[in-house]
Amino acid sequence: MAKAFNPEMLALARESKGFTQGDLIERLALPMSQGKLSKIENGLIPPTEEDVTALADALGYRREFFYHPHLRRAEPATYHRKRQKLSKGDWARIYAKAEIYRITASIFLRSVELAPSRSLPPSIDPDEVGDRVDDIARAVRQAWSMPRGPVEDVTSLMESAGIVVVPFDFGTELCDGFCQSASEGMPPVVFINTRQPKDRLRYSLAHELGHLVMHKIPNPEMERQANLFASEFLMPTADIAKDFYGLSLEKFMALKKFWKTSMAALMMKARDIGRMTESAHRYYMINMSKRGWRAKEPVEIEARETPKLIYQLVRAHMGHLHYTLDDLSTLTGLPPETFQDFFGLVSTPKFRIVT
Image (cartoon, rainbow, N blue to C red):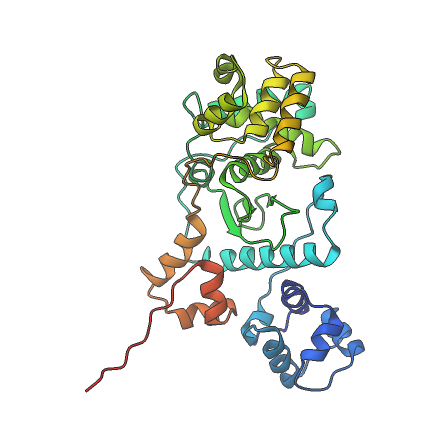
């Protein structure tokens, strides 16, 4: 049976490029009214073969892309003020690209099965434990048999439990990351913005882990709760409290290198557990601002934080399953160059024998 054209994939392709319907109309090689395009996207009329070819060329996708049977997931609920500053078009573009990653991964998972070495963390609703988010973070660390002290590699830890971490450039700094819970045969997925420094990236990963653990049902307090989770997960109070003595900017620099979290996060932790007064916290934050350290802190951390699972799915197909780049391009509907860009593949240079 021939596959049916999926109008949702057309909308996804258009949004991933940041195009409005009018933008797409202008790029088409054949005449099409916006009314017709709108009806095609909404599934009211089928496109002709010529329409599909023109749409694929204008959007930079293969024809096969538009025949995937996948449905787009609803956008995640958010109460994050920073995220809410994003324009509607920018958020649509980011989320569309994330959905393409998810759909592509789900195609790969038909043939390759993940073999996590840890179980997924337990789901715990903060309301069920009296909003004791610190206890939830400690419960996850215990469930994963984590050693005391800093987390060496948040990414590897999450991936060892089968959580797929997908890094890509969001094209803006107004969104650090977001996640999707497991469903439809897909494991949980965390999409992370590669524009952020390693210390903030680690915090963003722990923040999204908190959402996966605590927020099956969104609530207005979810961002505060996820921040508390990330703080305790990365900096357990029982382990870090002893380090908050003789505090100074230089001391926070040293603690940043050891705990692999930002100076700002360390200062907040010291305040939250009573090792720094509110006025002292304000003093440090003002000094950080005066020195320009709120935007870029003076020391960098050494941390790997290199996602592997999403790329291992590709390598499994190109290695054990003997797929070529052209095969994967046909399978996913992504042109070879786009596929290489999505999955960090380096094209092999072509040589001509000189005689």
